[in-house]
Length: 307
Image 1 (spheres, one colour):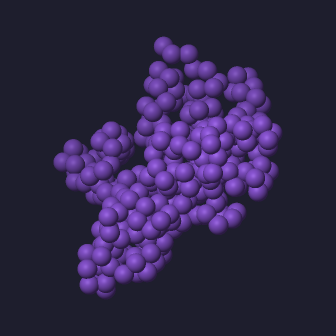
Image 2 (spheres, rainbow, N blue to C red):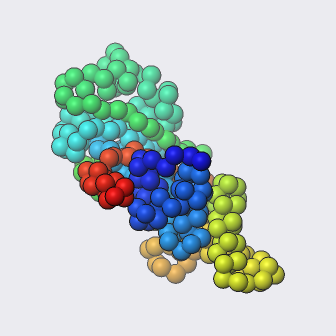
């Protein structure tokens, strides 16, 4: 039997959003397995939490850079939001984004590439900035998209300066349509991604593990309601379709009009443009995603749990 530590309970609570005692019981019932405990909570109707990448906890900035057919997004972290508002730090992040654009968003290549007009690497520039700004900072990640014909649109949410903010999105549209038309469509699609945070672009690109896990949860929920297996089978088809409509980019309802699926929006735009428009990829970088920060009031909650 795995030891159910306070830290393990906290991790489950952060992911599932359930109460402390419910989380402790879920972990006890599932031998300390976090993912199994989340599923157990959902099956019992205690939590509707889905697998999350983590809590947003780091400060700093994300940035985008683009040349039309290629665009990149980068994240550079700092310890405090105060430093993120510093012009020197903002200039550093812009420089990292420019270097990433020259390397098609490849993280390792960008780190080792020459920074701007300097004679040293991007990694060395960030290290040097730590000494001059006086706060720890890290070039954490980068990603990029390219099309042979068309546009890669960019969007920054919570912008603090041109191309800099807290959330960056790229959307790639392959097409021979007018660049202005594609840019307008791509910008709206990028805003949609910022708002909905889809798990995958298409159903086929969904993780097989995530799909199977969702099916298992839905089957258990249906069985607890007392439905026979033949009815459950039909129920699961409908519920999985609903699940896809919630988490798959092209299956989601477009947030701009609140009516059409994203796939239909692109189809209609292609019809208006008189030529095919193909969505080939998207990137969503949210500042601090996956970095967890300790809760200040957690000690009191642990004390209450153990009393």
